[in-house]
Structures are given as C-alpha cells and as structure tokens.
Length: 196
View 1: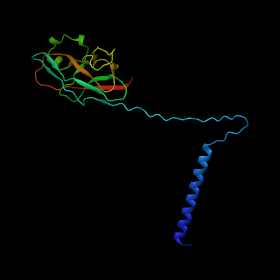
View 2: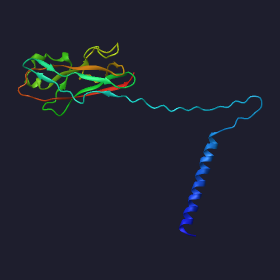
View 3: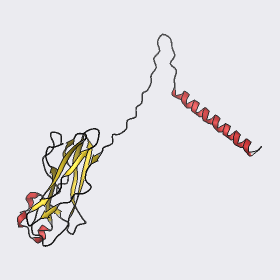
View 4: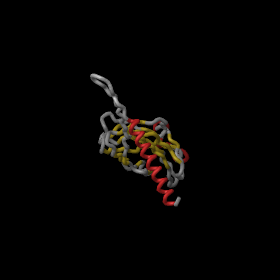
C-alpha cells in the first residue's frame, strides 16, 4: 500500500468521524414532541450578555505649586470625561502621600495645624491636601460638595457623570510657609469609576 493511499484512507476516515460527531451533536440538541390532540414543546432560550466597557478620560498626572511668598497653592483643573454609553459614578478611592520627591509630606486634617505658624521642619513635613468637585458643571444633581482630604482612609463618592459629559475636580491644600529651599513632593490619586 502506497503513501498516497494511506493518506487518502486516513483523510476519508477523519472526514467520516467528523461528520458522525457533528451529526450526533446536532441530533442531541433537538427533541421531538409527540402525542395526540395538542402537543407542547419546551425550548430553553439561553442568552449571552457582554459587560459594558467603562471608558473615562482623565489626566495621567497633575502638578501643584506652593508659593510661600504669596501664600498661594495652585493646581490645574482635573477634567474627567465619561465616554461610557451610560452614566458612571466617580469616587476618590484614595489620595495619599507618596515617596519620590525631595520631601515626603505627611497628610493631616486641615484643622490640625496653625498653618501660618509652622516652623521650617514642620512646613517640610505636613500638608492637608484635598480634592473636590470644582463646581456643579457636568455633575448629576446630588453630587458631593465636600472636600476629600488625603488623611481620610475611606473612599469618597464625588458624584455621577452622564454619558459624554465632563466634570471637573480641583485640588485644595493647607500648608506651611517656612520653606528654606525649593522642594518637590508627590501624592498618588486613585479614582474609581463604576456604573450608576
């Protein structure tokens, strides 16, 4: 028996096996209702539902500046755009001081310090950094006007954004003024977006 003959026989065998398997599975999926008068047949209707993709546009980083000479804290707006097909909730999951700057600040409550009286060591140590909705623009009625301070350990719901809408967050801070040189500090902001 030649190689071509063996290959043809093997191909025929595989084709028959596949046809048999396909035919059996098709017959197993069907049932026949029989009887006299009227006959009912039950058919299971199975659905498959995909999860909606949440899509939100936000900045990758935000820089703030403290100017002790003028006593000012400046930071750009943090625009959050909901690209999802339905409204989403925007929650501050966490806001925490992070390593990587020339100083690592300790987050405290705004009322914990007399900020203008901090000495050089404490000015380089403490900050009350917070985040909140800048105004009502874009947010669904009932959004939070409260400031989420970094010292808080629990998530804070800011509010809901309708589809194709932008809401704005803003950073606020209380800080010391006695800086003896230029420094950098880092914080990590984690936002969570979920369906309303």
